[in-house]
Image (cartoon, rainbow, N blue to C red):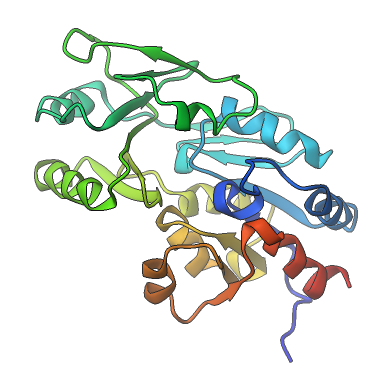
Length: 270
């Protein structure tokens, strides 16, 4: 029988994990997380989303959380105070853009208050129930400041994103790291940035370690935190390639079925 008494920290991704397909936290999930908060568990939300985008999504939980955003490039404490910030250098992004990204890709620079993009993409807009983090159409050929929190590409064909990733990393692997948050979402961060690194900073602040954590995720940007946790749980809706790569980890129910909350109820609440 598994021993869950040592678990004191719950770490969860948002999209495809805590959020349902409508990009909201269900009433049931809110209830379970409130119960765990009241019982003294530390809650960390770790997402690829920008903090202005993520903050209104976690508000329905009804209690303050640590928020890791942009895959670890930003950390906000439960009082919404910025604890950590790291951007990709402007010259690095400019060099990537200059390889000639085909127009069929939606390209996004995550800035502090806006996201700059080469085209309007309704699917991306739909990820934000509240448009707190607004798009700005730009011409990357005339842009001067390329400094950014995160570089993002989306395309309906995963194989084309894989080819683009390989092309970019061929010359820029020393400057950036890549991750697929979803099969159609390719993201680049500075090499020092990762959800797992950011979470480790929070755990040190709160005098915890990864042996006291349980983590939930569905994307390759969750990989390191899932492996580092005492128990890492993969969502049923995660790509088969991630499940196969982390075959030693347990697969739970999907985000559409409140898989995170159901699991926590069974193991920590019930």
